[in-house]
Image 1: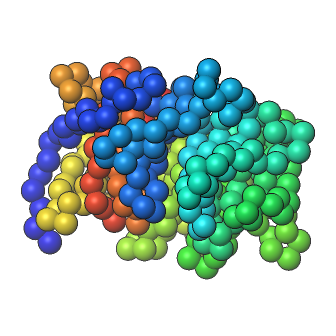
Image 2: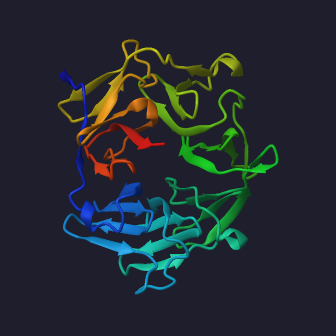
Length: 316
């Protein structure tokens, strides 16, 4: 595989930026039909490459949404768009563009922290203190309590490993694994040093997991380690990273010893401005189709590559 060194990433303006209700974009999502969806502070937007359609409550669509701040976007296997707001979750039918509130019992007015879809088509919606499980038609299957030290917590991510085990990570509480026999989540390699794990990926080449954490950088995780204490291996922060670009347009960071590092010394150029990467949170995910970045401080910039390994960068 031939590679050429890339010392900087140039991030360009979104062509349709002026058509958005606001330039502050909180979420960017590409659906199975190729459309780009933006979660803004003032509505959900669908960009088809020619025009932008906005879904929000306003003078002409009174009461469409209880809140216009879009917190999360995902798509189920039936091609419904699920999105969260500060006051509940909604399901959008792309065939009719009808928007239906998602039933979350007495928590329907709560901030939706994340929405994940698993291989069996299940949709998982997280709010403070609870994780909801839904079918694609919006029917609730179960509500799982989410607490740590008796305090309600959010679910960062829902992850399926190669053996179809379901792992979740919760704010301040580390990882949990679904016990399919009891249909309940149980602590999974709890370690007080690694409680805020936002991303989990499997590295097939090195047969280990990589965790994107808050405060501890990128951490290597091996559940087959000789002891639970050795399951987590933090990566060195002082080692500089090198960026590579392959002929297949795969962009990734690789260190000399094939370990990931804290990207303190690198920068991304946003138009005519430089943003130090020590002010960014970096998470790595496998087998995705695009890399997207949004920044509130410089308006929003978008860069899309077709990739099988990506780095997702977002402003803290």
